[in-house]
Image (cartoon, rainbow, N blue to C red; front, side):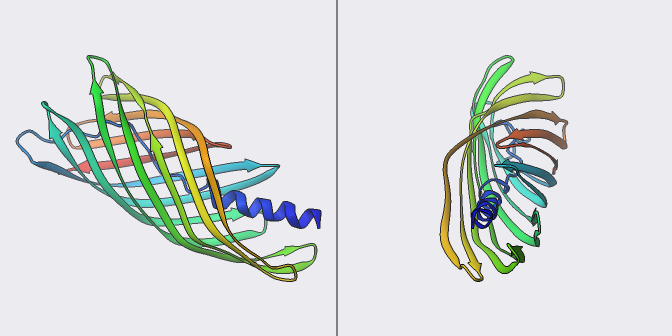
Length: 232
């Protein structure tokens, strides 16, 4: 029975901490002069690791990014975006395969000085369902994670560098998932992780039509990813 609950904890872990996506600095790429908005398109990838009571979780996700930047010299720059892609989840014997992911968000520049500035990022991510069968103490269980949500609120501080920014800040995140175990000892419930705080940082390289963000995050373990976007 103890091993059953340890395995259950492991399932709960990846439902709560492995959905991370790129956050980036609060300052987006600039809106082109005289434009109402400047659209951008890109691709992103994240490799995520998590640890909880000795359980090691790995997750990979790749997605397309669609955004638009607004603002000018007199108005704070801000970006609205959506992301579409796929993600997988692996934990011990659990392999949920690849499933679609959907995300949307906004980032805004609050203040920019000669060198330093800061901003905010809000984003949400949704994945429908991961399923697999696992063995617990010799018994077979069908595991399903449905309605997987994560919401991030971040406040990065950044500093200008030649052709870019370096940034660092806290991220507040909440995730929830509906977990079902069908087997000799069935379980069904809503799994919530509230008031979780992590830290993230990276570098954003900005050129006229290209932006590359390289980022690392620490929640329960270190994760890393990149986002490459093109403006037009």
